Image (cartoon, rainbow, N blue to C red; front, top):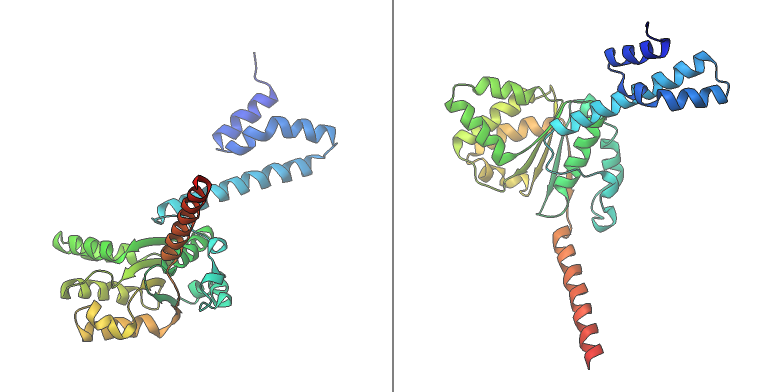
Length: 264
């Protein structure tokens, strides 16, 4: 017995990998018939839904490949707790104009003020806009470059990190770096210079970067390339982690006092 038109449609949808259309086809066709939709309206809806699903899937894959330590958004950031931050400047970064202009971004501040949250949030937006994006901790980056150096694969690894439209290098200055690590870091920055955007976070002021990179000449060369086209966001405020700890202790004390009072 020959296949029906509907069976052929379902088979072709499978061949074309139009999974979403195959899933919604039955229910939508029934609704379309009731609403007396014409063929153009039906095709428009089905193709739009399929395109949306494929785009969402591509975005999700991009985010997964970006290596974020967690998912944070700008909507989740408490700007009221960090009044030193110019919210308009952060929202402007979210337009991705800095990526198109191949500018860098540096978040400076003491531990816990939200540097990584903001860097990840900006990276999430970049990934959602289909810019190739990758996050890596500075210590892990240097370890990877050192490993590649000893395995005679340094150029391959540098080229890999250099290709991303947005590279996030987190926690510069948290752990010491020797001269070789500083040289490897410089080579990466030089490769990305004026080609792609890099987002940095650091707990050290620029005046202390000569200590971070163990050499004032290398530090100056790195800073020269980073800051040439760059937006710097300096965050002066309290630690979110300390805030949460204070709130937790306050809540604990309230519970203890309530129990004490009820038992007295």
